[in-house]
Length: 303
Image (cartoon, rainbow, N blue to C red; front, side):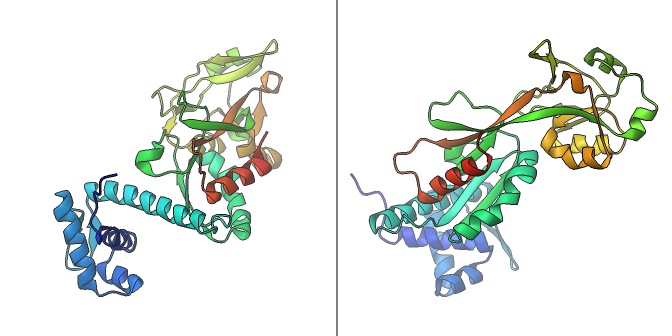
C-alpha cells in the first residue's frame, strides 16, 4: 500500500475534530493539553492540504463551513474505526465503548427507543449514544451512522435488516371533534370527515390509511385540510385538539385512549400494522458497541 498521509496528519485531524466538537480552538487545546497556537496551525495545515476552508473564524467563535461539516463527519467516523481496531487488536473490544449514532423516526424514538437508553447505558457506560430523529433515508457511509430504524427495509444488499416489531394502527379523534361530526361507521364514511394527512418523506405523497376488510388490509386514500411532514406526532397533536381524524400507531395514543382524550374509531376495521426495521451495514468486524445495542433492542423490542 502506498503511503498517502504524513506522520503528523492524524494528530492534526484529532485536533480539528476536537475544535469542531467544542467549537473553540482554546477549548480543544485545553482538552488535548497543547497550546491554542498548535490547534490553529494544525487546522491551517489541513486547510492547505485540502484546498478548502474548514472553519469560519471570528474574534469570538468558530463554526464549521459546509465543507468542514462534511470533513468532520468523515474524520470522526474514521477515528472511531481506528479506535475500534486498536481495542480489537489489544483485546479490549469485548468491552463496548465509543460513540454510537442511530437514526430513527420521531414516534418510534419517543415511545420505544429513548425510554430504553438509560438502561442500555447503565449496562454499557462506555458507550455514548447520539440520536438523530428523522423519517428521511440516511446514507450510512456519508453521514457516519451505525444504525437506523425505518418503516421498511430498503432494497440495499449492503444492509442487514431485522424486524423489531409490527406496530398496530388505530384511527382516533377527540370527543370535541366527534360531537359535531358526521356518522362514522365504515371507512367509506371518512369522505365526510376532516382526515389529517401525513406526507411520506420518501415519495412526497400523503400516506394512505389501512383498514382490515374481509381479513385483508387494504389502503384507502383520505383527504383533509391539515397536513404534516417529518413528524407523525404533529398529526396526533392536531387530533387531540379537535382538528379531525387521524390514523397513527396504537403505542403513540395508548394513554390518550385510556384517559378519554382521544376515542378509537372504526375498531371493526382495525388490526392492520406497519413494521419497524432495524438496519445496519454488513460488516465482518461489527464493533462491540453496535453488536451490544442490536442485541439489546432485539431483546427488548424484537418480534
